[in-house]
View (cartoon, helix red, strand yellow):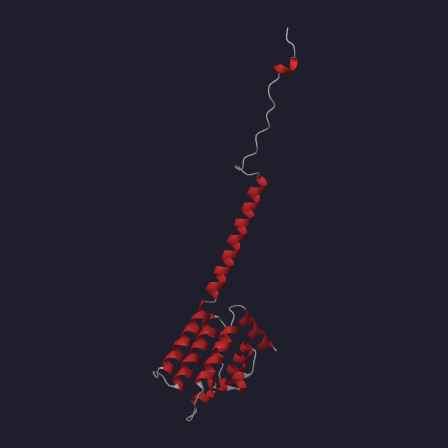
Length: 171
């Protein structure tokens, strides 16, 4: 006969610790939500980058014009004409603001003032981008005009600029 029935029992073992793989369904859902959010944000950033490509290109072209002027390859009036052409191409062709294609002088300068949120084009050194550039004794301050154009290009936005000009033309 046995002395102690407790000796027949086996040792107590702790249950196995849960392993990290495979994760619980809640973690899978969280991972899917994070990946989906990152893809969505990435696509938004890529679209914004692509939409701003014409603006970056215009900035580069105007910077190249300024370098050409500083090196003496073009004079100040050529700088004015070519920078005005770059602005027209940017606003009319790239951003689709078609009604600016036919504008000139005061309407054009007012539109540029609206975009830059100032009066430098209609009342400052930016007046040279109107019909003044065609007068016989026309001259331009290239340094001041270049700063003004850089300021203008910082205010140009692919979606807000057309809306801003549409609102101002309706007023």
